Picture 1 (spheres, rainbow, N blue to C red):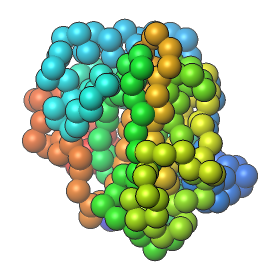
Picture 2 (cartoon, rainbow, N blue to C red):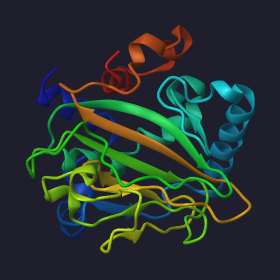
Picture 3 (tube, rainbow, N blue to C red):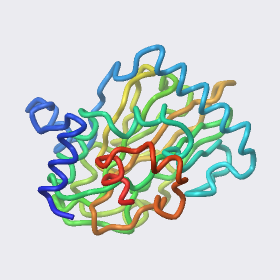
Picture 4 (cartoon, helix red, strand yellow):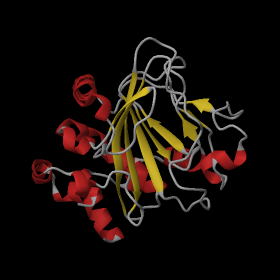
Length: 256
């Protein structure tokens, strides 16, 4: 695959550099994350939440096995296979434009399409990155997106990030005695349901404890440079019926 083929595929989704303002690009470059409010409308949110909850109930203790399970959360994985409603969260033109900006418009593919629900009293994570180690600033391999299916508040387990940490050339486990502890520069990523937050996955980040009596649901669509590994190897999981419904551009992004 080539960068030219990437450009052709992304143009199919309507993604292009001009969809982001100079200020939005600068926020991704300097802070490492960008929030786009109101990307999902009320009807789309209801459909995603309904399907999310159905899958949690149907899959039970097997939920998330295609990628990762985590105590204190309801995890889902391989969501490409589990309903076209999830296409909203990996085919969005502004999302793809932001991911491409983070990755320098290098050739990339979908890393994973997962769900995570922080359960009441649970959900706190160590600060971490989504790569195997530190990278040279600017040589970024992976970018992620958080789709808020519920409001992200100070109380319900919103993601914490350390702005600018993607440019430090270090990972939390190397720099902090306890990555589960509060970092002096961390901020909570707050927003209303329907917001998507695109972030450089080399940014230090982690979930916080959900101190409410309701779950806090989100979807995560991540992308990795073409020469990197996928968390979910879609060619090993994709159902024939799913493959048939996908467009060539979608198959390209999934590397199937």
